[in-house]
Length: 502
Image 1 (cartoon, rainbow, N blue to C red):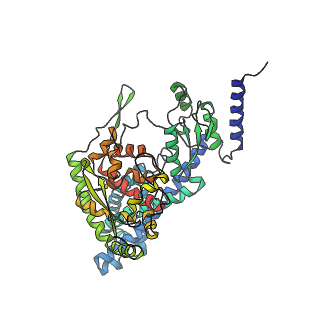
Image 2 (cartoon, helix red, strand yellow):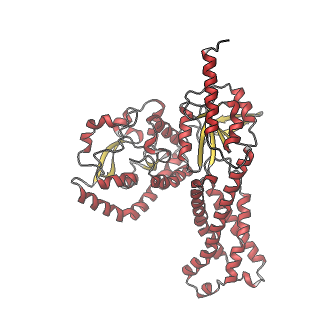
Image 3 (cartoon, rainbow, N blue to C red):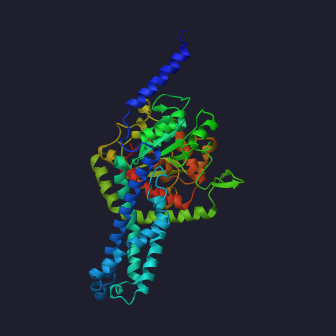
């Protein structure tokens, strides 16, 4: 009997997919998903414990020394015997036990990307409680000679240093783990299409994540598709997958649900909600007789929130301008000496309530570069009203370095201090680009534009215009002071990597 064209095509696709599976190198350890997950969990846990021990030991050694230097008390200096130092180090297990009670060693495979900031609050609380327990133990054992050097001032100094040394040790540990194959988390994305591609690009940006491929019954494209939904459990075993991210798919939801249930307890599962554009950090899940419902938080900033944000901007920009003043002078001299023209570049941008202001940056292009923009329109690499060229011929030699490191934006601290901008906020578009924004995206004009923001830590110039607008809306809709601190925390690492900068 003759084989029909559609049957032949189906067999060819299945055969090709099987050949792709056979040709890809698979992990040598673990044949079950839970074995792979356990391997990743053990690796992460060991590195977390090692980082915390190192950070606490640093605090235990430096704490008494710093206190002695501050106090200038000879008795304080002489009282730090080796026995007292050993007692300080012997308290490390107490702090580790408190950290464990705060859940700092749980759920290591329930998060796609390990970041110190998400645990920072628990680390600070753990140090506070651990310090209190240390004081109680020291007071209870006051009759022992080895505890004579234990004072409240010394414990407080150790905890303050630990608030820096423990997160710093974790940052170094997570950075090294992201470069080690045994520390990367293998992830599969269920579904294909624009959202799945966006999720995959974000996964690739994390050094601690290894994107394996897409799984879909009716894929919209064949690029990096490694199987269909029926093969998902086998693919998880084959690649040692620790997490599955579910995006939109044309597969029936009931079939997808049944397949995901089979992975429960073995592989972590993350689900991108259907109306993800409306869900923000301030949204929460409530239960209705066993039916989970997501509340959509109002997209606005209260008067109190604006006052807190502005006060922080004024204080932080004043401090940063004072610290950066030597660099401002050096950069100005270099710019003036290497190319004719002004030191600073001023350009009209659209700010809060659609009011225009003059943004201030170090000049990184030849004088009169704006007049040459139309001539370079054919080189534009981004969509929408944005204009970006990777190898822009107008950029000067020192300007290229300043732009790559984002140091050209330091003068914007003056804009922040004046109130035109904020440290964190939507991207400051030029007037022509901002005028092209309409609809829901105009929500961005309710907040001051920022020197950094979600657009900075999520991809910078690699993001499309639509994605930039979505991130700006998300920021305004779910603003919180803690979120601003989190964005500021992640900004230096993004800038140092130079990802998306031009």
